[in-house]
Length: 543
Image (cartoon, rainbow, N blue to C red):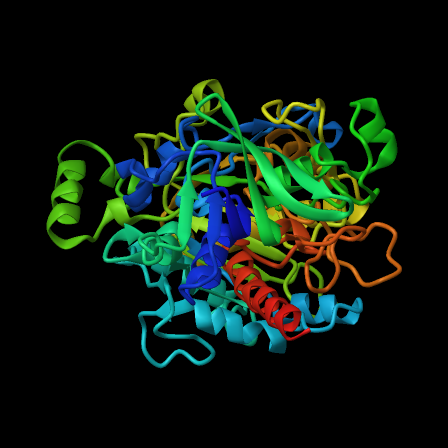
């Protein structure tokens, strides 16, 4: 079969949602294209396996940025999922919605239908919150959200330290994000609940859904100004598929703008450089790139302090493996962080501007720098890592070739804006304040990084430039905008401007980065988009 009602490009968080929702009526035929393979690696499904998948080229694009001026011309590796489930199959498993004000801000830009009140039902619809009695959370949805399988004495001490600084111990996915708590995780029965597990597995046996892996899209096909299909390569063979209804790009903040440009949608000057005929002149394609820039405060803990570092060694590790096999608990269910803290670094702020990922463990930074290995140190330690929630700096993603297998140029432009620089320094200072609180200080021997020798704002900023990097949340490169915005790429219904039958549904449509991890918001966006797409189909039939 080569003709479908819908063609979805990308089986990541958004693509899996769309494939499920658009095929659930049993009538609409759907083709889901994924450039990567099946999610069969056990490292995907064991939660702590993210330490391997974040460096595994079999399931990860492992993009490299251009040399970045704001971080001493360093080249940053940007992991992105290249497998069913996309980045939800390789990420740190953290469930964060962001602030209600994020979405209300989108609505105030003129994007009707995108306030928090509009999106909240889709967070609810997508979610199965295991813990009963949590206001504002959903139960019965595909995406399982659970608590950590085991708490940790040092992480408990972090919460007490936060409380002594005035942070409330609360659900940071509730009405007020300012606070501290254990992260909620996309984990079910000790296994990762990726978008593929949550949405694709229940749908993949439907006869009206076709899933094609190792299928790299090369361009959107057009009849005049209407998208009518996709050209792609699979196992060395060039193929085409046509769409009676819509083509939907769900490749994420890197792949979706790349495919638009390869298809003739973007800045005419750039397209001309690569010999690509213009279908729709949209200079905003690939612009407006935003990402969360994370910096690490690392502390050596006292020799007798409990630490995840110790749990990962020798007989202790054997015990953790047995615990996982028999109980689905313990170290192997560990996510990228234990404790979430959302804080205001300036008193005039209405909402938090910095998020912390805190874990009673420290990586061997030499091995991480030399080989990318995420291996824990032998000595006990704790990492307190701040990132600015709403950066002002903007970067870009653009093609370097008219060939789809050539990686695009990624320019993150970290710390370009003075406010971002100020917030980076403030985030590091607050981490130090947290570590000095009695509940936590009793475990700490000394600060490893930045270290006591680094004290001034200038020194802390230099440390941030030298050591900070991505926390894997790129968005914004196919900006959703109201009519009249010259840099808008899609409208409020996620339809690409200047053409018909083509939408973008993924994190790239976010006009501004949300205040937290991006997986849950991307899933909610896709849930809403599925309703928009089905409503359009009904309107077309009735017309």
